[in-house]
Length: 177
Image (cartoon, rainbow, N blue to C red):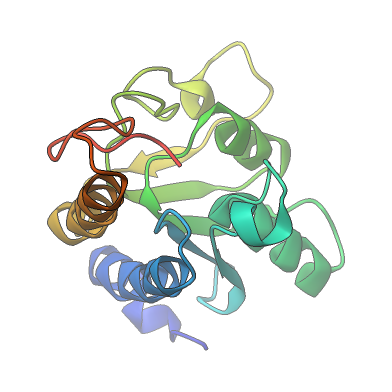
């Protein structure tokens, strides 16, 4: 998929988040925590898109962001993703935030905040830490209601299936992955 440069900017954040939400829906269908991500280059060309696959791959690092970064690096032929934008439905965790810094991603766009494990402004702010060698521009809250609702629905379903009200999150604040 390619978005012409004329479509890059504030309105394209929503279009890209819609792609990430479709990835999150794929995770939901697979019984994974519904987080989706897409990464595009400066011209708007999709370099990678993914959803959580920790259960499928039995891999604790198989978060949507990590999988999308891996695809993007392969597409570009380099681990340096300068000029790229990552769009993800949930604020990245410390692992994913660190990977974004290490990959030299230029910009991060996320949907729902994660007050329990978010590392891009909520709990930590790894991606803008001045002590690190690279910092990202961050835009949060894009389509936050839709991004949050798919997570809340997933955890409500999990709690109902387990027969208890616990499960690591509340209807208002879902647990991270």
